[in-house]
Length: 339
Figure 1 (cartoon, rainbow, N blue to C red):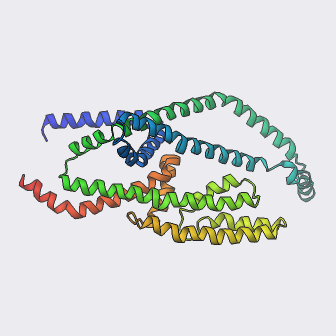
Figure 2 (tube, one colour; figure 1 turned 45 degrees about the vertical axis):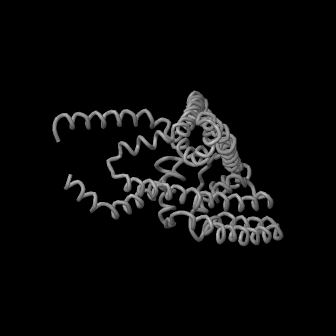
């Protein structure tokens, strides 16, 4: 490598690093825009046969706000509200604090005042909350800016998607047929994760969640969200929530509701998994469930909520790329040596 090439590569690395620093604060929103753009792109190409790319992209952005963003925000608010209610249900009065204090004094001879301790702790927490008010305003501002950025990115990804793909093909140092295999494999992996696993998990979780709402299980929105995540886990899935919910109904004197929830969850949710999943998965590349669950859990840690989608996609993309390497590596080496 001569000095000129080394200098150019150094510039590329420098600007790539600085660009990454610009993207990182809004990574969740950028990934969200990429995800929605990928889902909407086939519709964009069809609409461009009737209207201009600008009109098609603007229409899909508005549609995405109604179909994806607003429901997502509402779900997040509902889950957060249920989680807060779940914490607030831990009422000190129901914990029999006085009886516990008396028991400690009888057994140890030490007098304790848990109520005063709890009050002091509450005051300290209140002080912290007041001090963090500015931080909450900052979070809200950051979220609004991020949503605006995501909508702009979504618009331009849809409008200029064809040009972006042409540019990617031009700068990718691979023959056209290898690029076709690579991008085709990546496309199949993306749809396999979204349609064959994430979408099915959402459907199963929502179906199971309806049973919780109907039977009056407390904080049903929160537990429905948990079941969506658990539905990505093979074999067990949502049973880890609706099973204990059946037990809760039995303990609270509702045997009929408990029986109804058990039958509904075992049959309806089971049918959704046994019949709907094969129909969808058979249309796309098959991904091992271990890859899915590892990608989901690792993705949440790495990317936050968007890791639910991009964690499995990244692992699937690695496997797809390895397949392409296995198919073409020797030929590419021969071509490089002969050129």
